[in-house]
Length: 231
Image 1: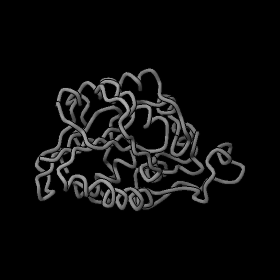
Image 2: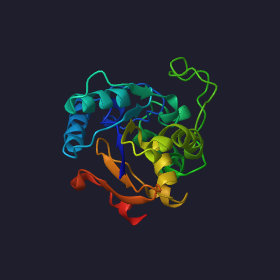
Image 3: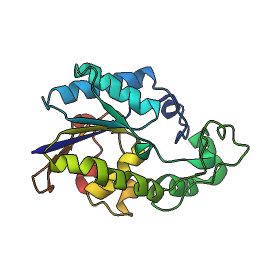
């Protein structure tokens, strides 16, 4: 049986402050580092020998993976970092407090920006304080945009390894994980709007040889999001 473990990074400073993070490169909190350590312990209990490790290019994900690898006692392994697994770009909302944005635009509008499939947040304008730090022609992304970079990367780089009976560990972000799970678990555009990914809780997906899913579960059942089991 082939194993794929997906982990959303531990809590970041902006998660704690309820700020839209997106492509801003923000550090983990101490709680986030503790969550990554706990994720490592849960993964270690499985006694799975991993063949490849993937993460995004944002430090909250790469540091979470490094902490997990330390718990697994895996030193000097190759870590594949790719922007294809980055969080979605939150555009003009980047760095802003979620409660403040709700007060300004209303909860329904903000929920559309956060959870709809194909409606992006407002674009990042040239005077945005993070525009220079996020140097890109892309100014905002919907989940659909994120899906269209995450899934092709998965199909090209990760799925073939699973087909070869390799065990894979991926540490990335809430929305890039949501996008990938839409593909793997065949979640609809409507259902994905209800879908939450907990920080630092490994999701184990077991594949049969024909790549059909045998089983999937969060390793920390107390912090599992029940919506996963109602797909």
